[in-house]
Length: 449
Image 1 (cartoon, one colour):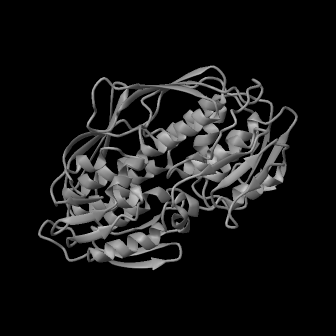
Image 2 (cartoon, helix red, strand yellow; image 1 turned 60 degrees about the vertical axis):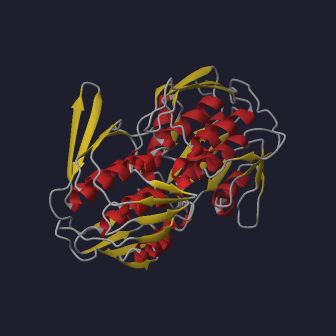
Image 3 (tube, one colour; image 1 turned 90 degrees about the vertical axis):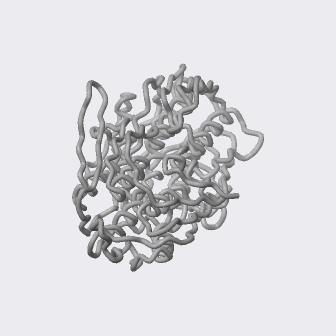
């Protein structure tokens, strides 16, 4: 499906959808745990729905309560009631699925759920869409094999992947170009049989804030573990179970980067609701980066709710940004850099190549189509803005670009189009619904068959 974005100004107040990272962690833990959890205002997206169906296939009973009326900003679900399986000390067992579990486009679901499924004694197979079938889980599978799990996959460690317990524990080394490998083991290991001990050496770890998020959930569950201060080593004992998780899901900083950038590029102001600057999400660093570029960023707390306003009244200035902890904002940072005066460097983010697409290569390719000078480096991008406009910031030309079926690339290119000299036609716009349903409607895009 194609869509056209016509350049225009973005202003107003936008409620940010719930965090995908929080939503999937809560859903999986509630499904694995005992009792009934009430997850309020989860992210209702394609990725989250994929996770929900995987949890149902494993034996969780999930009731979805829809909103009484449609929300144009994507908040289509009020709550999920999840009756858990009770894996671990509670003694529950997985239902044996009669077919492979399809995670769709959700890498988070694939990695976290397959480690959880390794707690069972029956073989469970995972598959997904074309992108998922090219995303390797080889380091995670090797680590699972080292603690007694039977695993099979393609030679590259890609789906379809089959795992079969029991989880015996032991010492393993787990290099993590994506933090999801480590989060997967940390969430599953406490539910292994009592008496088991899983010790993990982590010689490489990108995206550290996501591990802090995972550990915060273990802390809330009063799960005992040992960890090195730099997250290079962990020891987790089995024999635990997860209690019900209740409450609202925090807003998503990764998603918030897109409307925030739209406001900055076109001047704004844009006000964003639903974020908590004290949350563990690493992508909250995006707002500090916007400020460094010259955007106006103002946080305000009203009663129990935070509001952040972003705007631009002058030129944006180039800079150097280390995105190792925040690879998901690479596409939108490439776009905002294209509107900054001077040469910006996005560095230390080679792992952006192993996301839904090779995002370094893809963003360099597509921004060049819009007239932006880019240089692809092994671990990042150099980006120079175009000719300055009368408004004091560079202008991109219109044209046709390819979203490559990657939700963050599609949304980044849509935002880039807002300040272009002419309309931009984007292919594969439906991919935006993976994490941010309704985003393109906020930009008043024109859909084409």
